[in-house]
Image 1 (cartoon, helix red, strand yellow):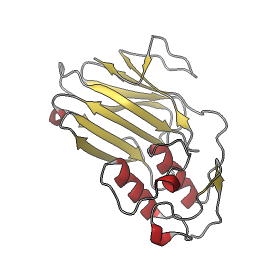
Image 2 (spheres, rainbow, N blue to C red):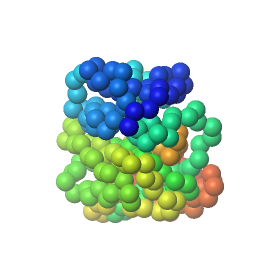
Image 3 (cartoon, rainbow, N blue to C red):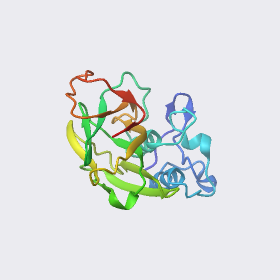
Image 4 (cartoon, helix red, strand yellow):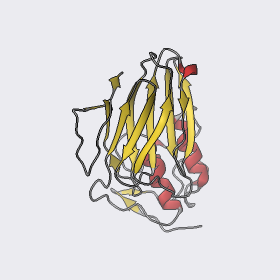
Length: 209
């Protein structure tokens, strides 16, 4: 499907964003797969970083994937208004739980653990799951949709592990359906997540069990 160029924060991304030979043509699924490959350290060539950085934040991550999907589906890349969801990852003795109070279009995070083989990553409903092991003690996890599907509000187990392993969740990034960044908080124990409020102290970024 050919679409007209759409301006997102001043970035003209109606054309293909990652392939030099595709310049001037519409964005398509190859742009998504190339962006995923870049995130997964596969070094796709050629790769136009500035064009693939859909929200122009200087990083390539799940937000850009959701943004390109929206363009391909004809929904445009509208300037974000307000964050539409809150996301909290709580860590217990044997699993990690994601709690969201709004629709989620994508999630990216890193699991740091001494024994990655003992960790089982669980897919989120309606989203694709891609993982990449790096440095033997880190697992990059990426969840997204090729067709604009989202995860409804609720609680979801995203990983399980043996008791005593003590993994860490780091560098968590989430996207709402409009490719807005959703703040991801990581905490220990059970949390009551309600409309932007949680019942226990939390820290952004990472926490160790």
